[in-house]
Amino acid sequence: DTGVSQNPRHKITKRGQNVTFRCDPISEHNRLYWYRQTLGQGPEFLTYFQNEAQLEKSRLLSDRFSAERPKGSFSTLEIQRTEQGDSAMYLCASSSSTNTEAFFGQGTRLTVV
Amino acid sequence: GENVEQHPSTLSVQEGDSAVIKCTYSDSASNYFPWYKQELGKRPQLIIDIRSNVGEKKDQRIAVTLNKTAKHFSLHITETQPEDSAVYFCAATGDMRFGAGTRLTVKP
Image (cartoon, rainbow over all chains, first blue to last red; front, side, top):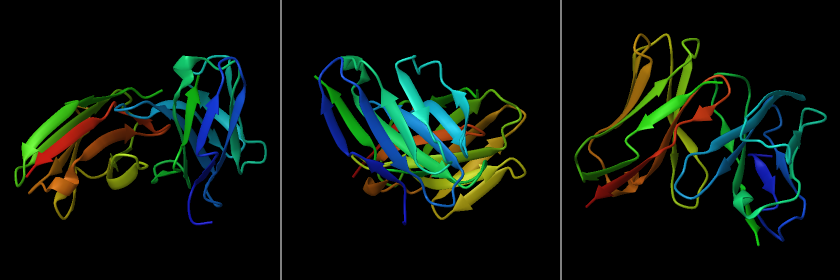
């Protein structure tokens, strides 16, 4: 494993369906971040984990969004009852600790039709 | 969480000119300030970072300056080249919240 891996790369779903994305961080990294990015905008912070603990969750993350990192390794981001406004690139990043470089995955592009 | 503001949102320069992008932050406890570059269709990648115990850091044509009193830090790119065209993001610790980004265009 040489980098952060996200799956799937692309997801098209119908409005109202649930979707789940997976992020596999660099193996020794204990911090994991989720972001949402729309075209031309900066990555919007969604949430982050220190090991398995979810330390902060953005107010942008409505109750339809949930993230887990059960064993402190991979993480999942679930969106329930998807809406067209959820269409975006979802980025995951990991770092070895605070105050160190975060490495990004290639993202999952979600399209809600 | 940390609030990071970034200016300008777009910046167009002639090849060879310098470019400066500025970020301000709200949390005086923040002590790590990275800059990321994102080319079209690619993931963000770190280009330079600075910690609060130094005021300036350089790496070839790129430099970052930090003013802790004023709570702002800036990215400086000298002798810009067309391949510097990208979107640049700043962030501040500890939860890696990014600024809104600056789209830099370097015209040949």
